[in-house]
Length: 574
Image 1 (cartoon, rainbow, N blue to C red):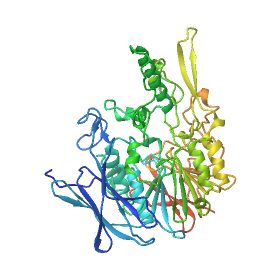
Image 2 (cartoon, one colour):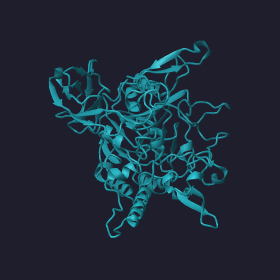
Image 3 (cartoon, rainbow, N blue to C red):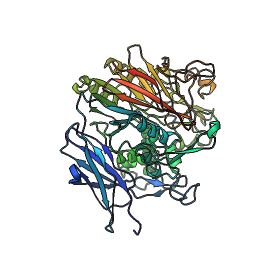
Image 4 (tube, helix red, strand yellow):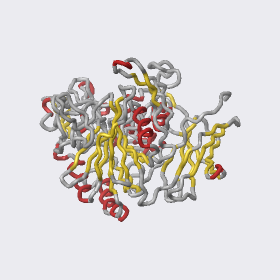
């Protein structure tokens, strides 16, 4: 410990109440930690410290001196990271209070943050600016996007983040210090260092370094789980990417465990001896299926009785925000024999169900009758929800979109196993019945009936919006760091021909027309206005102003050195 101690992140704000707020930060030493706050920073509170249990690096990390695969890490290696949290109490709504964190290392040396401001939950009637964002994932334009948020609208009052914060949630450097400069916390704290090259003629080859925006040091963030917050089966041998791709349904994990228990019992000399048919703990079940442990360990969020941090509701000023856990495993769409994909299992694994992927299986049930659906019904009928001026629901998976990731329909995969005359498995295939789309069939009608004004989501990495016949607004504002295009005209979603009748290849599969931006839409090659932003050079962000009830969207062209931020769309919540 000869070098000076460092904070791994600046502090950030979590879980505000009417009189308090949590301050959270991270270091790579256990130490002692406190928050100083108030006038002249004269008051202080000691932080509690916990160690993250799953954070690791591996051969594909870009951290420290590792700039190519396997230079330092050959296999997953635990990385010791400590989380510090202090609750600052006795606060008054509407009053900003200065604060600073200090971390004392075991050798007696210390490090302090800069001074930032905090406040408790705003009261109803307070005019707020809320950043609506998603799908950062260390993508190239994220740092520029967040820098332009601050330059354009100043300090926001909250961040609503609708999933896919990073790519691989157990890879520590993606959260904290990826050496390419675009890790999660640096981008949202104005500490990133991401370089983009301009390609207009007069500035061709000129590069600009973007620093992100100093946002969450002074404003609380509320997040929803996306598919990139979910790790698959745990291993200290296979790569973190492979573990992320290896999510496995909990029911299937239980079946395999029970089957192995029966086989073990049959082999025992004393067949009457009891053999456990179920996993010994929830952690063991998660290790053999999927988990959101790192995400849940990093953030202090509101909690529901049944869903914990996974789905919850909170009042923030005039907004009642309802956050759902609606995401599934993403699988490759192709039908090649080597594919463990959306529509099929790998040929070489047909007789080994432990190697199956089970298609795009859903992580948390949301269909009518499920715990989450029942909780949502109750929330939509609660006094807190009904009296709110603005009713906003956010979840990761799109109900309406021009993007690729809205197909197949959001439902449990229906498995078909084909066998030959001898009973040998020839193929394992999956379909997703359109009429069983749980979001469209079950969730959206509930939201319509409850007079929700805005449904906010991500996943497809583009900006587009829709309005239902009842006037409910749908906004996907995920063209933050990159895009995979919009499925209109000649651009079609990648769907095998035999599945195209069910998995619609162009337009919104669920029947709404995308709204053309109201102020300054981009123009297509035919000179007609585009109803979307789907670009790897133009980044977009959206701001909800609760004082006026307007949602404004802005775009910024990263190709041009002197590009201005353009407000291109605005709509009002009734």
